[in-house]
Amino acid sequence: MSSIAELLASRSSLAAVSDTPGLDVELLLAHCLDKDRSYLKTWPEREVGEQQQQQFAVLLQRRQRGEPIAYLIGSRGFWTLDLRVNASTLIPRPETELLVELALEKLADTALARILDLGTGTGAIALAIASENNHWQVLACDVQAEAVALAQDNGQQNKIHNVEFLQSNWFAQIPVQQFDLIVSNPPYIDPADPHLAQGDVRFEPRSALVAAGKGLADIRHIIQQAQAYLEPGAWLLLEHGYDQGPAVRELLHTQGYSAVATRQDIAGMDRVSLAQYPATA
Ligand SMILES: C[S@@+](CC[C@H](N)C(=O)[O-])C[C@H]1O[C@@H](n2cnc3c(N)ncnc32)[C@H](O)[C@@H]1O
Image 1 (cartoon, helix red, strand yellow):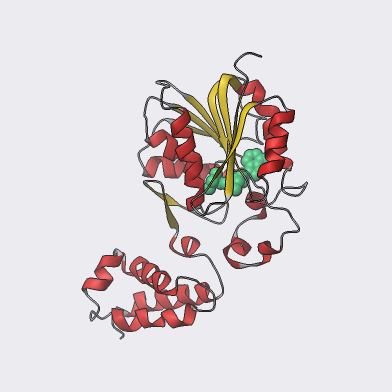
Image 2: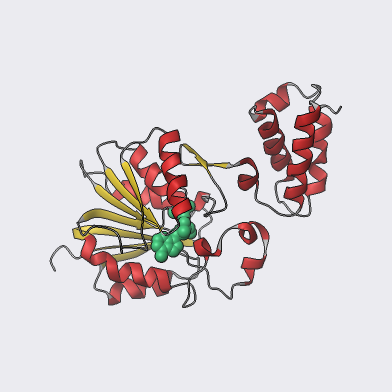
């Protein structure tokens, strides 16, 4: 039998696939032991049972082949929430929290906001916004039935009851109504992007990542369709690639939106463009 400290030493076997091998082995071992990471630091000399050691060895091997940690342990933190993840959709990214921050900024004075999240995946954005004010009503959709079920499960696990999830191809199944804010992190990677063959994204579904037209087809569709669903003066917030800001702003201007702007993420990269449906049409 090996001790916790001995098993954590296997971090060196992840050096080629991960920028954070130490953190990765801690997360995997803590998951197998059903403890948090502080337990590992407190009890480094404790022996690990045979079955847990075997489970750890299997997960370590899968990580060595490049599988994302979040899929291996089945969860990822986002905003203040712990979300279940699976291979039906994207693992929520820290940079997407910018969309949540901007949504909260725009809704600060709206007591009873109605919000739409398109392409909800795990439900990350919808649930994070809804968790900040239980008087707001959030509707969230995804085209993948499995993602909708996952997002519903995440709502229940996090005890958030003001989000309704439904399966829809963008606006197709959304009953016509006016929202105070529409938010989306749609697929926006160019199918020819070489990064699709590298790192964690190799294991994520292309349906969550890739869009035709150099990655802009879904963004263009949302910008065109959203106007019928926005209150005059309401906001549309879209995540996009670091080099897509000018193209997205151009699409927003062409469709007659006002107050068009792009905001940068924590790494200083263009990440979210936003615009207002004209208050006086
Ligand atoms: C980049 S992921 C974002 C997931 C989640 N909102 C997040 O930020 O972590 C894009 C999501 O859009 C969904 N999607 C792709 N095409 C769609 C469509 N035509 N209609 C609705 N959702 C779609 C995918 O299934 C995926 O869950």
